[in-house]
Length: 303
Image 1 (spheres, helix red, strand yellow):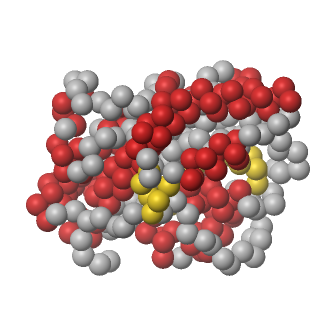
Image 2 (image 1 turned 180 degrees about the vertical axis):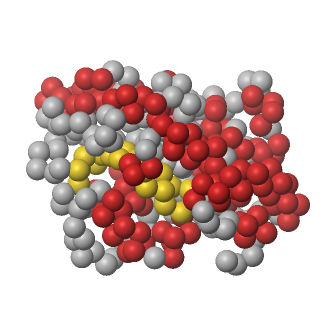
């Protein structure tokens, strides 16, 4: 049975959707649909699309000719158990992790959670300052299937998460991509990833922008989708297994109809300073692990 041999494990809002899309279009790579099954994140049970091994491995049956088979569940890096579960499942798996300035990431994550109806507080400053209350179970949106993602500080402490990743997988099985590099020279990062996966350059030079900031046209529809999406996806996967009919593209189209683009937001100076203080030690840890200077992330200066 075909099983995945590489995983894009996160982090959210760090370019994972774009990279996954680019790799999916390579003739020797298969990426499963749905993109984020989150099977190995046992600690995020309501966030998973499949919860048993047979259903999970069925996602990769269409991979017939491709020798590189993967998935991209961005919650794996944050999950306390997913990386260990992946190592137990396939010790030889290759892992791609993507990191970003946590100040930008936290703000962008807030927008994504609003779009997905996991978040209902439209003001990021208020959502940031509600983290302690939400740890106690207060102010949790009814459609939020993974309240842990509302802990913006924890989700965006990527230094800790990369440190854990490198404790679990050998360094030569891990590729860490900095979002800044992907934005500055997408083609170079893409070629580097192909080399990491043991694939030849396919000569690609055009890379469309993917997963830009958006918000729902109808918040009620977004809440409905968030609440019932796992059930709908599970039903669609069972339907496909029985009849061969794949209705996932239609479901995605219905979700896309509810999207509209939104402008870029920025942090107020006082809030930016608060976040910089919060993330200072973790950014220093990430800098040591990757042997790079990320001090400009905290100051807002150019590098």
